[in-house]
Image 1: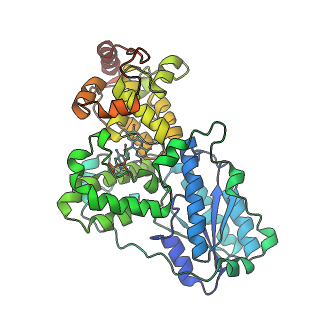
Image 2: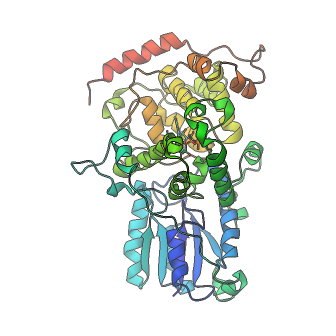
Image 3: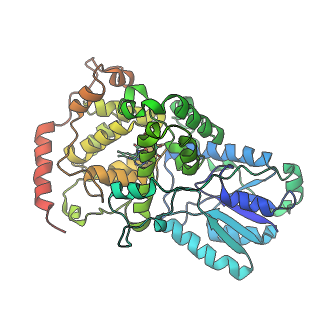
Length: 461
Ligand code: FAD
């Protein structure tokens, strides 16, 4: 039997059930064909931002090479997944389609409709878990509902075994043999270059190139380096952006070049005390997906509806403030350093993400969705669950959110987490010159205004 493995946010060859099961059934090269679909047409499925597109290009390039070593061709198509899968499985004579499950609302609709339609054509569909330690419907409160608070959620799953990882499959033969067995003329595969995922004019990606190795092997290397040399100090060091001592695994997890189960398994080879805080962060990632699954409107709607009455401004109502924030010219070095790090490298340290989001929402009074969209475009780890969940956490409109009155003070954060100014000096060369702007907003007055708005909406909804 020939199986088509549809890759999505699971761009790896190791610990990949859908691929491993297809290979287990295969008898000869060509029995497994891999497919990636660039879907910019399904309603509600978010188009990737610029930084994520850059990452995707390299992740697919790396996947294509890794699959080639296993004797598996990777076909690239763009368009409507339902139509592509129907046509391609017919052309290739595939009897099975495998994929890893997705948890966002629009993605689940796409997958459900394909899962209903293909069997009518005699094609069997099988889906697997690849992206979470535990899928959302397997984690429930005592009364059977979804968790809305992180701590009990993590208490439940932190002691649950997610099961062993799967090995990378053995090679089925040569790629040439596989390609020879396929009906070539009708494959019509597209190329990565045609998709134009990389920036050209201007080429803003040089900082990304020098910061990241966006391959499956790069993710493995980062995981093992981090566990061998950094995780022991994570509890203390994770709050110091200048030291860069967090794992930097988020984009690999985002694109599924690394599975959370691989992280879990490798971390459990260390002493439990040394990895518990780090694993609880992996737990936050799980929690964000849990929230997105149960509350599919999370990316665009306040989870606490009383926030619908908050008079946030849109980006177009505050164009200068928004631009100053986005480009790192607010006059608050802590936030500006973070925004510049983001623009240059596609990453911003978590401590600074919180303060930067807080300044935008609570001091500048701009809607969290505007900041979320900027992060969506500029983060290499921009994630359909973690990004909106964390923005709603900072806004106070999320499920297990920071209390609204917790307004980060960027000056105090800097004094506390960057007392020697190593982080801000690294990102703002003109800091002590007249070229650096004075603060664009009065922290105290804007804080009081935010609290007044909040007291008006609290109690509503
Ligand atoms: P580490 O500290 O090494 O943590 C290990 C892993 O745990 C991370 O790779 C990530 O997968 C997960 N993790 C850690 N913190 C969180 C968290 N608060 N929420 C969810 N998962 C977490 N993370 C994303 O992966 N994608 C996003 O789009 C994203 N947007 C964010 C937006 C805002 C406003 C804020 C405050 C946070 C956001 N985060 C997001 C969470 C967090 O900042 C990043 O996961 C973290 O900075 C990534 O760096 P790291 O891999 O070195 O993290």
